[in-house]
Length: 582
Image 1 (cartoon, rainbow, N blue to C red):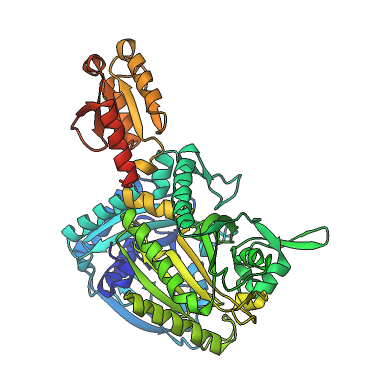
Image 2 (cartoon, one colour):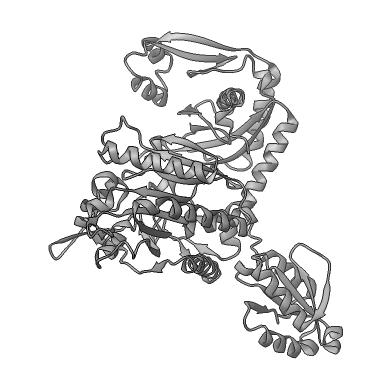
């Protein structure tokens, strides 16, 4: 989906349409006052003070009609430059504009405003030439919004919209928006009883319902199974730690603003864990190691907590507590290349099996000019960044370099995915770290009998299971593959009186799968529709023919075709699909 904010022409068009909206509102509500009307990635909005008036669904068509009337009139949009004193006089009755003017930098002696017909608004611009260019728009939604985003301030009315050059472009984009709404993992999560949230529990603290926890367990077992085959040893560490642990690692100095406040208990200071590496450093430090022991691969699906502003929270994609699919690989310098390659190959293998195709690699490096964010060791950084480039070039992976995106302790490889809904974000990561092993005085005895410091690879294939679930639900529209579906098979008897016993026997035979038996008294058509709404991959229909012939008839989600097979053939079919992660 196109990002309107980043498209220069569409940005100008939508910025102008925000003023068209404001002019129409001013015609309909003469006492209306306006705060800001920025362009956003999916259009524009304007925050408006309408006094006691609250916008409703019935108001939107009325506002749109007035906007079309103004656009048809075709007035030119004229830019003027005025002084700050002139601006203060022009908007003396509008406290919101006065606030904007007062907060302008003193160097802004000239202020620009735009006039179209009987409406003038402060704005840096630019705008289109005439309101007649603003014919193809749609007001998409509305909500309340606190002035300046502060809950202590007055609630304003926020109206959203979008504008394009042609009706066809507008309709295509609106269809994309509808598709995005249908894909939104928050809607899917609610419809399929996957997760819930409660303000009483706390913002950003999702609760996984039985269906969601089945998906969770399957993903956890899947990735841990792959890790075990590669020699990872899994551990379980506490979800909090002494503040001194994070001071030793450096996270307290570099990451404290993203952590929850410390708690004092019996003279000790604790903090909820924001990441797992300090705990895993201590696991390594628990034993004496020889070079023959390395690489040591420590894995954990670990609960972490990070403070996110409430405005940034989003379902299970952006939360305040999550489980990382985390691992730390302790290696000798000579083993970096092979282990890094193995991590990249694991990521690619998982993406291939789960049909993830829209991704790219970023090499995140430090900003050498930033002397605060990054661990101060130029030699370490140069060595680490050069090593990663060499490995990636040797593997033959295309990547782009991103200055200033490294972790404070080392460079990293990020895998950026483009989800079906929203902006690109990081799913998988692998970080190279020469820093933390030194901070924790970690050592191994080399073949010459000398103690040396290991290097650590931090890696997360799923990133967090929470975010991966959100991503996968949106990619599949909730039509999960058979192996991951909370209910894999739904059995429907055509007539409970004659066919229910056969269905119960079949359910017992399928006891190694997740099976639901719909023995309600609803009509067959209703049961079939419900099976589709619940996105169950396979629906079995048992009538008299199936009972008489000792067979099974089934339909796949999204198909009207019915296949009839023996019970053993059906079990083989299920096994083949699950094995193929289909």
